[in-house]
Amino acid sequence: MRLDGKVALITGGAGSIGLATARLFLAEGARVVLSDKADPPALDTVFVHADVTDSAAVERAVAVCVSEFGGLDIAFANAGVFGAVAPVEDYPDDVFARVLAVNVLGPFHVAKHALKVMRPGGSLVLNSSVVGLTSDPGIAAYATSKHALVGLMRTAAKEVAARGIRVNTIHPGPVENAFQQAIEVTATGLESARAAGAFDAMIPLGRHASPDEIARAVLFLASDESSFVTGATIPVDGGMSA
Image (cartoon, rainbow, N blue to C red; front, side):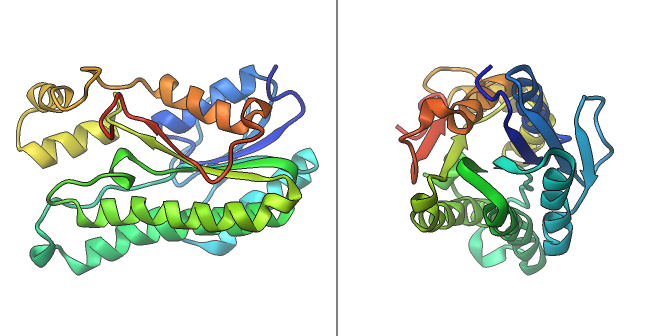
């Protein structure tokens, strides 16, 4: 029970990675608060409807962790959106702003409010992407937002180290879920199976990750097994960023 007695907050909790992480955290003994704009999943967790772009809504979700379970030990900033595929000179201003609002301002709100109440020895994990370490044509908003999380993480890691709190980013490659499928179809213009095959060809391990594989990386960073890991970028990308 690697998270026995721990209290965790997961944003983007209704998506595949959020759900896989919640199930794993519960199995490892954590008490979990899920947050999302979508409807609550059928899990033994407390659920809070919240838009991560709304600072007050994130603050309420953090407050629920304290009021329901007495504190907060783990926060996983997982909510995110992709945006559009277009060259920088043609990229829609409103889409760029929306992607940064969700993918950068959202995790900032999680960090801001979670770190205020997080107990010593806690862990903040920000979900970036393989394109937070690399990039490709046409994804200016998404790649910019995911790179920005590295700067936020490194700053926060140094600010809270004296309290024994660790802050890290994970960088998933393509994952078998609807979010990734939509990205692949948009990026390639192919139907979903052919688009997935095109992406598999770019991954040294030759396949997509499962949500559970990403969740296991989050568990490592959330648990005491990573007690001397902070300020780190952890690729979970099948070798794409190598």
